[in-house]
Length: 194
Image 1 (cartoon, helix red, strand yellow):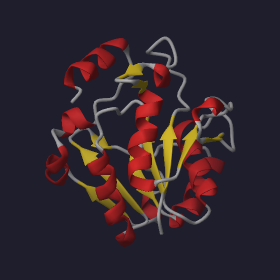
Image 2 (cartoon, helix red, strand yellow; image 1 turned 90 degrees about the horizontal axis):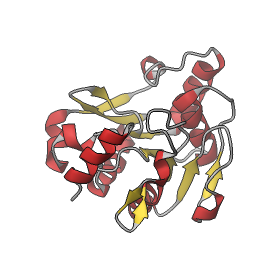
Image 3 (spheres, one colour; image 1 turned 180 degrees about the vertical axis):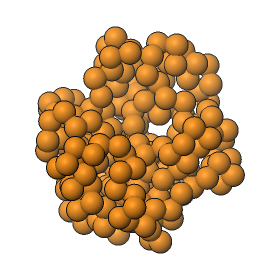
Image 4 (cartoon, one colour; image 1 turned 90 degrees about the vertical axis):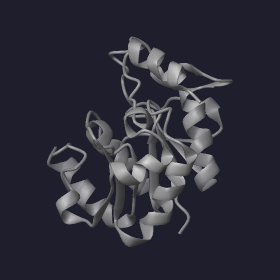
C-alpha cells in the first residue's frame, strides 16, 4: 500500500524562539521542504500540526493531535488514525538534511515490519520513520497511559532498524539527522545544505 506522508510540525519551537517550521530553506521554508520531500516519495501528504490547527494555507490537509499535551507520540497516533490502515511516513520539519532517497528506502523496507526506523549513532530517529497499521493500537495504549517515549510501543510490534552502515549510503548519518532546534543548529544546517 502506498504510504501517506506526514510533515511533523507540531513542536513548540521553544529553543528556536519562534516557529522553526517557517524558517527559510531555499525558495521555501522548513515545512515546505519537508512537504516536497514527502510528496516526492508518497504523492499524498498531510501536516501534523500538534494540538492547534496551523498551516492551513499550505495546500495540505492539517491533522491535529487527538489528545493534547502528549508530544510526538500524540502526533504519531494522529498520523496512524488519519492514514486509515495505510503506512504513515513521518518526517520532522526540523530534519532538513534527510534526503528523499532515504525516505524512499524506508518505504521499500516497510513490507517486512510494522515500523522501519533509522538508528543513527545518537539512537533511534522516530520522526523520520515509517509506521504501519500494526502500530496503531500499541501507540494508542501508550498515549492513554501517558507512556510517551517514542520507542515505548516497540516491544509490541515488529521494528526493523536501519543502522548507520545502511544509512551511510544516503550521507553522513550525523549530518542527515542534524536536528534544527536552536539558532546555532539552523546555521549549521544551512552550512551543510546541498
